Structures are given as structure tokens and as C-alpha cells.
Length: 249
Ligand SMILES: [Zn+2]
Image 1 (cartoon, rainbow, N blue to C red):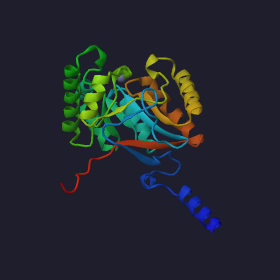
Image 2 (cartoon, protein in one colour):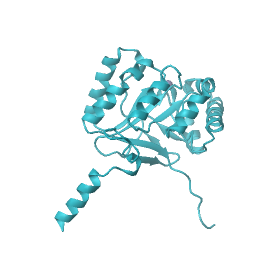
Image 3 (cartoon, rainbow, N blue to C red):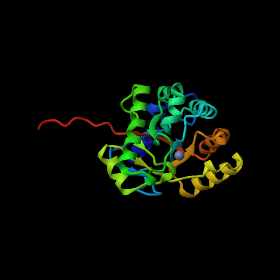
Image 4 (cartoon, rainbow, N blue to C red):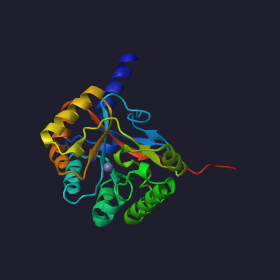
């Protein structure tokens, strides 16, 4: 019996997941979806760690869309059949709505990152709330998907308890991070990549925070994905759990 069970588990472990079925041979692929309940706050820099198994990695990209680099990043993700999460800046999405629609069409999760990357610690909660709602409305109107803009990341991860409360009331998921290679610093791509690989090896799992507005992030992303593949990491897509209407009174 135990042998049979082991055999079944081995078959399951080796079988392509439903998500990866349409991926080409040898691609990294997306191994599973992690759905997150509205109002949750995730990412060990500030909140709870995501419920990931060892070697599970989620990719997130902030500050775009930027035509110069986001397109290259989308091409790389498509080649490896990976679903990521993009925390877009409203003002930039308005300048490149076709790119926002491409992110949606290629199956990525879209979260928001304020209208103009403002530090929400420096404005009143009312101003912050209006800013976030304007960005959410723009994203949903542009993509036509109501499932978009349910995740939020603070610019500079600069959070306040009052904004956290308002975001939770609005059913938003607040996303911090587990692994940040500081790719916004503008170091040479090879240097940032080495730092990122070290962080991934040390932590072993979690949400990686990158920036699709940075050209050098587009430069090193193919090598980073090759590293994940060679070392046996698996990609997890993040999604907001969809509210199901309650039955009965
Ligand atoms: Zn940012």
C-alpha cells in the first residue's frame, strides 16, 4: 500500500499542473495559484509570511507600466510561461493603457501602487483613500476586469495604521515583500542579480519585489528565471480570493 501511495505521489509530483499544460517544454511555468482573502496583509517585511512551501517564489513588479522596460519583462515572462503580479502607478498606466491591457490579457494579476507614487505617510488618510480609489477605478475601467486592483502595495512600503484600516475596510489586500534586491538603486544588472540570488537562497521562499519600470531589471530577469529553473524553484501566482455571496439570511 505504501509503495502504491509513493508511486501515486511521484506521478502527481511529476505531472504538469493544469496551469502549466499550455506551456512549452522546458519552460519554468507557474506551478499553482495562491489566493489571498480580502483584508489580509502579506509579506514578512511587515506582516505574515505567505503560506508557501520551500522553494516557492512569487514575482511582483512595481512602478510601471513603462514602455521601455515593461514590454521586455512581459516578453520574458511569456517565454517562460509565468504569471506575476504588477503593482501599477495610475499616472503611468494612463500614459500606457495598451500596456495595462496587455498585462491583463497575458493573465497577470494587477494590483495598484497609488496614482503618482506618493508617500502615503505624508498625506491625510482622506487624500490617500481618494488617490487609491482613483487608481483602482482607472485600472478596472481600462482592463474591463473587476478582479483587478484588489491588491495594494505602498510606495516605498511606507505604511500607516490608519491607511491599513481603510484598505482592509475596502477589501484590499496589502502586500509587503519577503525578498527585496533593491533593484531600484540602479546598480549594474549583474550586481543586482547576484544580490537577488543570494537573498533567494538564504530565505528559500516568498514574494520577490522587483521594479518593471527599471531597464536593468528587464536586463537581468531572463538570467534570474534561468537560475530559478536550474535550482528547482517553483513559481506561484498571487490572486485575490473572489468573494462568494453568502447563502441564506
Ligand atoms: Zn514603488
